[in-house]
Image 1 (cartoon, chains in turn yellow, orange):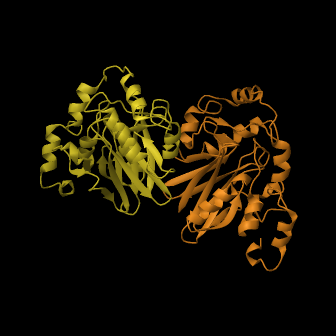
Image 2 (tube, helix red, strand yellow):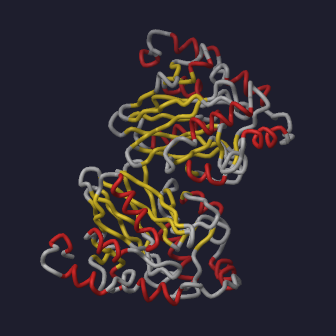
Image 3 (cartoon, one colour):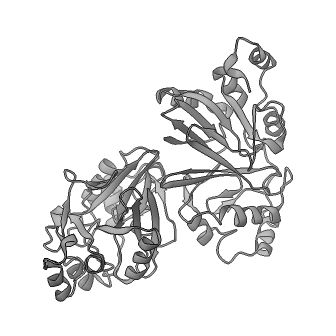
Amino acid sequence: MIFRQLFEPESSTYTYLFGNRETGEALLIDPVLEMVERDLEAVQELGLALAYTLETHIHADHVTSACRLRSLTGCKVAYPSMDDLPCADIGVSEMAPLSMGAISFHPLYTPGHTETHHCYLVDVPGAIRVFTGDALLIDGCGRTDFQGGDSAALYRSIHDKLFSLPADTLVFPAHDYQQRRVSTVAQERDRNARLGSGRSLADFQRIMSELDLPYPKRIDVAVPANRLCGDCPEEDYIRLQEPEGPSMQG
Amino acid sequence: MIFRQLFEPESSTYTYLFGNRETGEALLIDPVLEMVERDLEAVQELGLALAYTLETHIHADHVTSACRLRSLTGCKVAYPSMDDLPCADIGVSEMAPLSMGAISFHPLYTPGHTETHHCYLVDVPGAIRVFTGDALLIDGCGRTDFQGGDSAALYRSIHDKLFSLPADTLVFPAHDYQQRRVSTVAQERDRNARLGSGRSLADFQRIMSELDLPYPKRIDVAVPANRLCGDCPEEDYIRLQEPEGPSMQG
């Protein structure tokens, strides 16, 4: 198995690359439109072919490169099935994980940052990882004031679905604004300033209600674009529907 | 493969447990004397037998449980061969890694905190880890003013041996005093306040010379005890030499 953590500095987004040497396939979690070239180069350098993109949620701070990557490589675009996006090839849910050979991406339904947010658990022997999107961040969490956000729901998602994972589960968030890259479930349970040891639901709701954050700069562009899997040009989409692209079948 | 990160709060020491399901063996990196019971319970709960203890260096802040564990389980005690300890069963070096079935512990000679300090690289597919002892800590490093410490040597060890590892290598230190548990090579290269991006050797030497740390509380007890692999009672040692203990042969 191959694993890479990639960083996009404009929105401080981490994109995660998984590769399966046995099948020759690669998967990207939360790829960013501006980084298509870098991501494809990384996949190619590893001698792999991009097979899937997988989103944790409909992002408000950047546009996904999902459908751009599909145009360029014929990969399949996976989204939480709850998002009900016509542009997606695959809908994932807790009952419908995504597998790339022996590597399985188990969705965990974790509403609160957005209404349909999912984390992904990847349990490879000796290295269990959870990709927490904008639900759980290192010593923080995503905001809960847009897109059906709900601080009580986020508290429950994090406590019930993430803090109940094994202590050594590696936590890989979708963002960090201080260049931190990884944490563990034990670390966040112990010391997350908003959600860790000793923080009640009431504490968390108060903290979130007092954040006083600015209106998200890119939300009015990013959310509609992401509901179109990154807003592919129509000609790309039409090309993909044509019979000469058998690898594009969803 | 099984992996656990265990914490001892008195000296803020992380002990690392590796298990190999195929051989039924377990290994502990830097076990602490006061935590013998917890560590043996963890090994037993996993259905494993302790096969090895492995030390990064002669600790000054806690006493190892190495020879106590050997008395209790018949495990083998591994130390850097440079330490030249008569109490050790196995001497490891860059040329002599330690293997537990398919899991290999590759020593990296990293002097600077102590003269004979070693880190251990464990490269399992898709999850490369380095155990950095007291050389590289999260956003910090070990002190360099005792036991042959040398800040120029530590700077070179970290830059040449650790920062040259793949960016996604997980960094597991021997201590953290803020309950942080894991970092990566990329994170430390980017943001380690003493050694990261933009810090020259001269900067580092100045920082280390200005730390003004107190005399280590336990050094006068811990170092001599650790040079005896934790200062086993003589009767234990004698018992181990007797022919009825065939599993104790070094």
